[in-house]
Length: 484
Ligand SMILES: Cc1ncc(COP(=O)(O)O)c(C=O)c1O
Image (cartoon, rainbow, N blue to C red; front, side):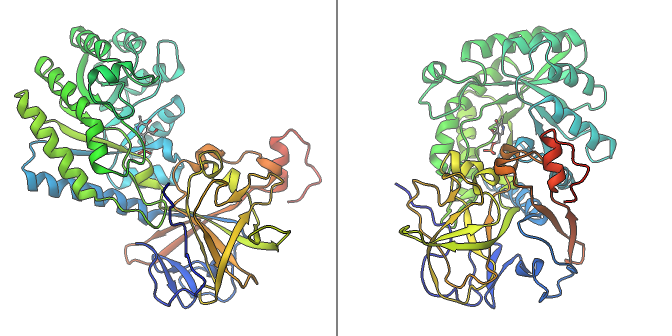
């Protein structure tokens, strides 16, 4: 069983200048994210990095420069490898909005030049808002995944949005999605989604697989013929998503290979097809032991595509990826204060945080997912092994997850101790819900959006957390006399 490294794994203090990963470092006993001292957010004793107030804990951090860095890195990597292996197609980066649909995220991904992937009718409204603000230019591809059969609000909204945005590409994952597109009479470039989630040796195995996503191979051929016969539709994109957080590059490309074969055969018959979209799956560092060779992956992907297309004598396609977790995981952190320490005959001391682990990071509780946890201060003091407990009364509200074998070490000194969960920016907030009423009616934290201006100086925007009145109103209470 793997044992992810989720923090500092020893009793000795963290040496000054220690780098935990690309963006987290220890300076004078305090944790810095990209050079920004995090303890100052709670502390009068601040490092004068442009932040001029004290915020309450818990606090959610949204650090936008990491999102741009992720997008720029991947686009540059593909450009480099395309040149290196003389690949005859382009690369298109799309952001999968389901990972985190917050306004500041979508504005940042579009601002960085990403195409946009969506999955529901409300997503269309988000794209419409961005269009209205001039952030979604006409040439930016908008990929419409998700279920959208005739009669669904999403299907109607896509047809309407086509009048506002020319490069709107519905990806058909069920035969029932074709009639509304054909009946609209509007010109659409469309995609077809292959049923291919998981590792499959070949087409026959793919067909037998039980998945509600995408078309079986036979339906794929039929759908392609319907599209070709419809005067207003053009087949543009082939979509095959094979998994999420795929950390082995050979396995990742191996899963895609049967789909590449089908792409090449479809291309022989439908020459308008020009994009191979591998969907999500690109991994990202959620713990400190992450080791994925992005360059080797891209090289293997492109050379395998060259080999397959060469065998079928068709030109190589443009490559698209829909990057959800990869784009947004690392930009998000959630900071808490340790409010109490309890022994209670437990084999490890309980450090109780001022919020909930299970409702802030549902994947840690539901799937046993690991995230990075580090102290924000007292890093220059001795550490010992502990367990974290949330404020709710739920026995599952703990970290590391119950079945985990990863030890968590935190400073022995707990006076004014703050800790952070890192790499939690993808899916956790969307799964836990935003501004609802949560377990044990704990209010939602303040948010701090951090960006950098052109001179590299930090910029801050504070979004207030929920008040008691907000939480109670959600639950149907009259709150006239409740202040906070
Ligand atoms: C169709 C589609 N594309 C992209 C993604 C994003 O995947 P990931 O977060 O692995 O990048 C998902 C995730 O569920 C998806 O369903």
